[in-house]
Image (tube, rainbow, N blue to C red; front, side, top):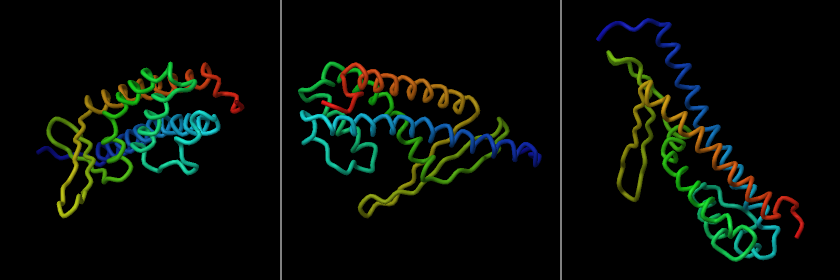
Length: 172
């Protein structure tokens, strides 16, 4: 393997941290939209009983709540299919978000160029495992581009549903 200069190493490290930030930012933007949707729904009588006062912490639990709400009778039902489809598309990026938020970031330097490595150990019952994602420059570009589009589309769908369903006013 060829020697990698300190400059190349530092640039790769900065780039990897930027990518980590992009993943977390896009996912957080969608999570905020999901929280807002649930908050607004909770104030609407037809949804009030379906949404606990304290929202769950995990995004998967929040998404399950949203799916339940949009399938129920109420002003969001006409938007339910679009919201559910957008959340389905987001699901592809959940492992990236989880590893970016809770995993270790390392940079490898094979001959082909820097590779970003996200990894995290997991324990399920008595089983120990490890999740690993390796991203070369092309994969990083594809990931950030697709996640950017997904996040923008999902937040637009949620914002439109809030506005057009009448939930924007917070008054019933």
